Length: 166
Image (cartoon, rainbow, N blue to C red):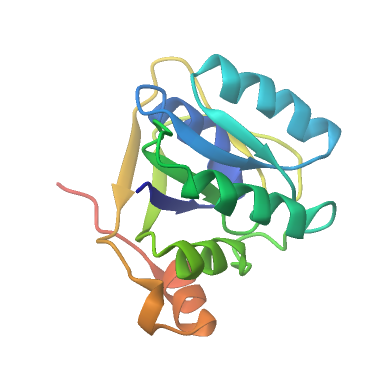
């Protein structure tokens, strides 16, 4: 069973690269921007599942849970931007929690740091690592959604601040 990776929308480029060697389900927006990211996700060997909070949310989540049920899939992770696709930035939405609760997948929070990046003029200030910059991924321990409420998981996602090694 895949692990649900939860991250901020601004870190999608870094996450797509981070899971390159671990085929994953990636929930992608049905927007035009989502189409661009879908192409990149497929090129990296993962499987996009289209649907978002504003366009096809229920269908996207149902499709994702259906695919997680298939015994023969080869996917390691189920990737969700907690605040996407329209924000507000760094405020967690319920999609990942509901999939984790229904399919009993562990939730793992991923925070990204970059030594140097470009910040796009978008609602989330999407970050693209500059060449030769150091990108670090910090992960939480696994959370089980089974015995938690949505507000507990949202609070944990929004307040997870790992310490960097010195």
